[in-house]
Amino acid sequence: MRLQREEVDDRPATRSHAKADPSTLTLEFRHAHRLVDPAAEGVQTWQVSLLADDATVARVRATRGQYWKAHNVGERMADEESLAAVTAGQLFDADGQFRPEEAGLSVLGPSMRSMTRYVDEDLHGAEFRECDLTGARLIGVVMQDAVIDGLITNLVVNGVEVTEYVEAELDRRHPVRVLIRSEDPADLREASRQLHAGWTATIERIRRTPGIERRSVNDEWSAVQTMRHLVFVHDSWFRRCCLGSTELFTPMGIGTTVEPYRGAHGLDLSLDPALDEIVSVRDAQAAELEAWLDEVTAVQLAARAPVPDDDVWPPYARGRLVRQCLGTVLNETFEHHGFCVRDLDLIEAQDAE
Image: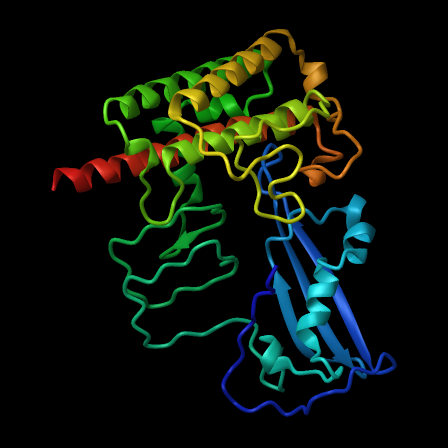
C-alpha cells in the first residue's frame, strides 16, 4: 500500500527536518469509517500525523485500508506490511533521518492547506481513477461531457443536492435495486432470480460474437474476468460469510489484490478458463444461492454472519449480519453486470465504426 500524498501550497516550509527521536516524535493514527449502505462495504480513511513537540509537521492519508477493522488492528499493526510499517518506511531514510519530501508527505507550515488547489488549470480529459474526492469543491468550472462513476453521496450541483434524483432514476431504470435493498426474503429471492436472468441474457449476447468476452476497454476487466470475480464474490461473501464454509475458494476466481489474500485460499492466478467453464460454475453458484434463499427466514438474515475465525478474505466481515453479507453478493452481481454491459456496448460501437 502506498500512502497517498496531501498537497500544500508552494511556499517553503518553516520547519527543518526532525530527527527520529522517540522522545520528540509522535505518530498519531486516526481512523474514520463511513458506512454509506449497511448492506454494502463502507469507505475507510486512515490519517497518520507526525508530531514534533506536540506540533504536527507532516501528514499522510490512506483511503483503501478496508481490511483494517476493530478486531484485527493489533494483528495488522504487527504485520510488517501494515499501515504502521509502511508509514515508518516512508517517514525515515536508512539513517533514521526524517525526510518528508522524499517520502511524499506534506510538510506543514503556518498556512497549511489540506487539499490540492487548482486555479486556471486545463484538466480537459483528465481521469481520476480509484480516488477519494470526499469534500472536493469545483467552483466556476466548465464541465461538459463529463462522467462520474463511483460511490456518490451528498453531491451538490449548482446549489442542488442531486444524489436523491440520481438514485431515484437508477431505481426507475433498474427496479431490481429496490428488491436488493429489501429486508423481505421473498424480495431477495426475486432479486437473485432477476440478476441471474440478466446475466443469462448477457452471456447469450456474448456468444453471438466469439472472442468479445476477452476484450476490454478503458483498462476495465473483460467479461470473463468480471464473471471470474463474481465466482470469488460468491465463494467469499456467500459460502464463507453466509454459510460459514471453510472450503477453499474456486481456483478460477479473481479476488482482491490486497496481500496476503491475493491468490490465497485456493485461488490460482495462472488459470485462463474458457467461457463455458466459467458459465458452468456461475450457474451452479446461482442455483446454490437460490436454493438457500428459498429456505432462509428473516430471523436468519438478521443473525450475525457465521464468518470462520481465520485469516481468509474478507477478514472485515466479522461482526456483520447475514443480510449485510448477502447484500454484498447481490450488489456485486448487479453492479458488475452493469459494467459488463457498458463495456460490451463500447466494444460493439467501436467495431461498428
